Length: 333
Image 1: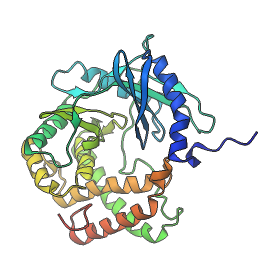
Image 2: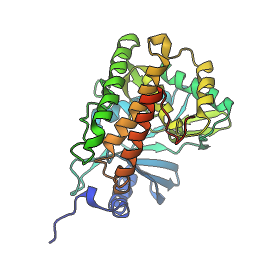
Image 3: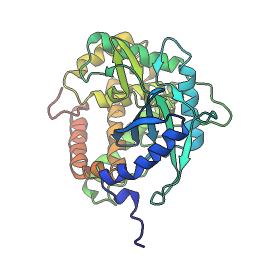
Image 4: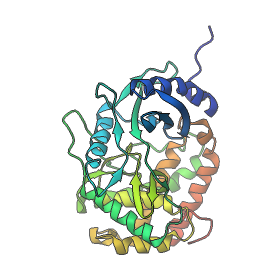
């Protein structure tokens, strides 16, 4: 019998095909009796859209996420508590008939157990890449409400604390054939991390979403619905905003909307000792994290982007060092 090929060496199509039986198994264990199971996303993790007589659900299987059972319980605790808050619309977790919110399976070609969670499918349409000023206001208000409503974690749950901007990882560019970029990337890391450490001293650490960008939001009119709490952790709330702004910076014209955001938010970076130039480095630090993670991500299509992504990252960081402003666009915005 031929050896089982490692999951990370499979094509995207083969990875999804490998996971589909687990989606069917998990959906049944969640008591859904699905009428259809469709792939919704295969990126950092894998989400299937489950249609059933009981409604539509999102079944997420953690692939790249290093989350422990205790961490996932923390995620479930927060989303369960938010479901009771009428001011916030967030994904509501769904449990098995016996009350379990987390299911686990073993994949022979994978190096750790597969953890799965299930959420009710959120209403609405995707949050636009170029939101109206009203939607920017709603976004600022939603972000602040999340910061004002952190969860009370049960004793069997815990969430990680961010102590550096690349989550304790080692910069792997030299080992992966990108040695020429290492001095620049190390310089960006040192500057951004120093700013972050100072921020930890000036703004209290609390539980944040840590991934609240347009891909993790939907909208109905001006109301925002929040999903994907997989990255929630302890960090200063300003770091939640800088992380989100990184994704919005890919869109022309977002800078004007940032100004509108701060008009609607109760405080700004300088209130906690972060200059606007320092703020640019905090935003850029997300790019450094992603560039480092893409080197070893399980998804082969994303991993194949490594050369272009690394080169573009270097170009963006060079412009940052020269101008003091971080842009993801080819021209200053």
